[in-house]
View 1 (tube, rainbow, N blue to C red):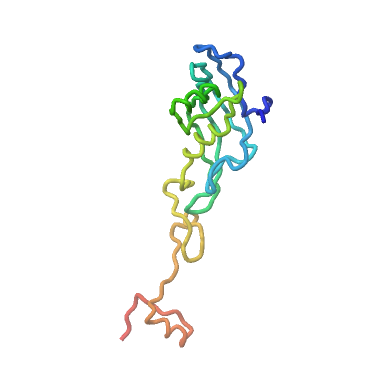
View 2 (cartoon, rainbow, N blue to C red; view 1 turned 90 degrees about the vertical axis):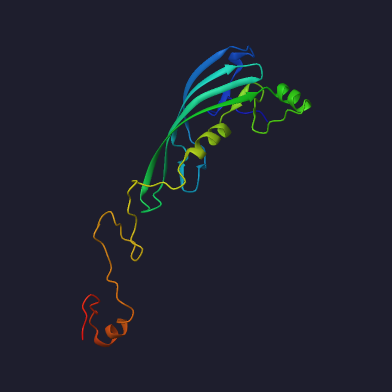
Length: 190
C-alpha cells in the first residue's frame, strides 16, 4: 500500500528526481497524530505542529533535515496543575531508496534505524516521533520551585506557604480521647 501523497506527513521527493546535490526547502503546518508523546506529557491530537524542512538528494536517498515546533501539554508531577511545554527540536534523517536498501542488505550492511522511501514518498511520522518524544520531560513541573501538594490533605502548598497540620505526640493521643480537648505537645505539665 502506497502512502497518501495528500497527507501532510508525507513528503513528495519527485522534484529532487534522484539527482545528488538537488535541494528543496519547505515549511508545513500539520496536525499532531494520536499518542504523540508519553503518558505524562504529549502534543494533543490535532494540535498544530510547525515544520521547517530541507530535503537534500544524496547518492543513498534523501537527507531530510529540519526543526519541529509545537506545544506539549501534561500535568505537573508535584501539584498536578496543567503544564505547557514548548517543543523545539532539530532532526536529520536519511531516507534510503528501496533499491539501495536491497543492495545494502546483499552486502550485509543492514542498518535497522534507516527509513525507506516508498517510491518517491517519505513518511515523516516515525521521524517526528523519534525526534520529539525523547525530548519531552520525564517529570514536567509547572515551576522549578513548585512545592507540590500537602501529603496530608492535598492542598496546594503554593497557595498557602504556611500550611501545616497539628502533629500530636502519639503518647498524648489517648488523653485527647478522654478530655475531648487537643493535647498541647509543646507545653510540659507536671
